[in-house]
Length: 375
Image: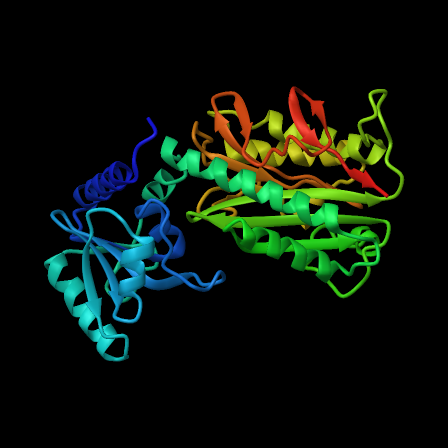
């Protein structure tokens, strides 16, 4: 069911009140930008993309639901960010009044019972792991927003790479990508760029003031509605290869090797499998490709959602994959990488960041991006 925002918020309030009963707690207090976005169905509590917590909090008791914020932020957040059945508790922005008034109010409404929090403060308890895992399974309304984020992110990456020139620096390509993201209403969580010189040395790296040269790799993570979509694309500067119908396509040995390695990981992404199974599948694929130990020297991705990643894939991450989870992996070989964000639906993976205009090939029944070759 694709719920309206108000019904989604009501559903999540019911979830949180169920937590209060299970844990015999008096309140749920959510400070982080990730949990705030989850609870409010996509609102933001922060101006800063790198902040862990923002200028507003969610506080839920058995009979009330509050937005805690200050006088400097309340008007804009009411008008532009937060909708739903919230009661606003607004404090002066100055310290120490803000802290003192807010803490007094929180303790009062909790009635002396324990307070569960994503970022627990003094006299608060951390959300149990089982509760944290509940948000990894996305509602259909969240999935619909995620598809929008993924499509916009893929479009931004394509625009930036099609504009790029070999005499651009890595930083110039990153700047073009960030501009393309903002023009689409997306925040850049990170933008990684490497030209031909640095591709052989680093698997993933922030952009430097060096020229792209003959090839560029662009990897990004973009956020909107609190949801993080990740992808990578590659561009080669040179004559394009063409199919018989005249369409440009590149499927060289590097693409083939990279996509074959990725397919092993994606094939392991099934409901009921542990996330560690994907990690071990990648480990075996790297060994077969002549790159042993890569999973121990380079991050590989994991479960995505309101963080990127929510849970990183590792040898002992026994969390079970479920329908409605989002996944993003970024396997790499020297000079080549690939990544998209997928939604798990039973034994199927739906590509949230698929770009139908980007050159692609079908690998194991999935459309996967190739290296774009333009003069």
